[in-house]
Length: 95
Image (cartoon, rainbow, N blue to C red; front, side):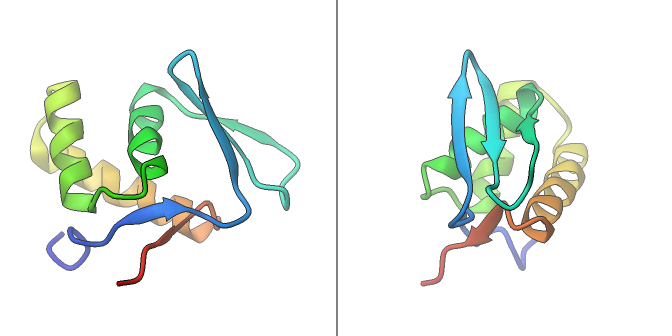
């Protein structure tokens, strides 16, 4: 993951999001559906909303919070971030 572990994901410019009772709710005005994230996705989204956490730090936080193997968490996190980026829900902060 070394090529992306210092990149900082941030919400896409058109995404409206809230965390309600621990669950992240996302609405992209271009889409007609409200997305509800599971507990891990909501935890990650909360960090993304802070706009200051590199991917490597998000991975470490997921491993600590959910007591999961680092290799499993890394594979899942990379897939999750790639999906969010492909759907325009996140972008990466430019230096």
